[in-house]
Image (cartoon, rainbow, N blue to C red; front, side, top):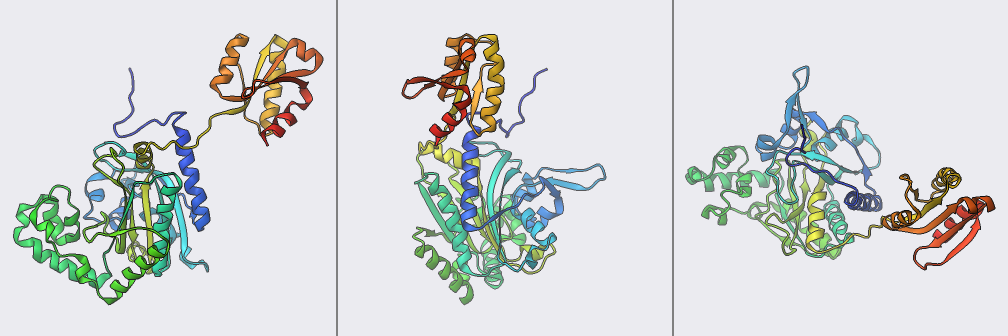
Length: 423
């Protein structure tokens, strides 16, 4: 019987996994600059967390979650996104009581959604996301957006487009909600069943519908920007001011609607304009969610964050023809000839590794020529040749694979020689 990988998942093999490591390390280094600290939450949570935190009317909750009952009949869900879990931890561990606020967190880990697999979109995928909790300052909105844009630029992406919108405060959203209901209700029967359900649950999400995007009522639907009160207008104006001050280009898109119920005020998406990237151009999405902590049992706490898919990032890099600066070379490969030399190489290899060098040797009893070929495959910077004759004289032959030069030195000095050359 043969087994195959489940649909919508992937094996990331050596040669490819190094790209993931590079991207993840870049994210960690950038978060350190911005003073975001890593948080690691469980892969699964109680289903109610996502129902309340993500929103009952969202496609994620209604259609895409991997939900099951545990042995005691409790409803458990594999996390479909990272914000709800992060805010749950923030509330449960009382991070809001720390004297230094806002609390700035980031996460990198697998998420799970039952979606139709396609390029850059999987059922198990990896998200990098950040959350800043505890500040009403629009400057933190600009900081979050800045971190996302800088992450992509550091990795070399150039075909980027940032779109932003304001969803307003509670009063602004209420007025907009009533206008949307009045606009769509007379002809809601012409829309899909999802939109018909959303009319009273969350009419804003009708604007995000993929099936009915070309319906004529979509084009002239009331814009949220028409219903912003003065506080919301001023807030959005400040966010734009700070983005401009940071030399971040953006476009205001009144039709931008994030797919999660907890957003208010700032919402944004970063897209790829790279040719051949595909129909789904969104790389990253985020926004402000001032009521989420309260919704899941915590104190009223403002928050803002983003999440992005590592898979879609790698697809965008490929679309732009960007090669990440990844080296798979090693410092030294030990070639041996003779039984005593093989035995000595085992200890020498261990000594090299303990000294911080990357090193390898032959384990298949290959001939000398084949061992040199193996050294080439490992992209070894140096090859140390040790035979029984060299061992008797307590020397080793070192070949610089870049210059082709070769010299003999004492075996006792080989590690210090390699370390000095590496510096």
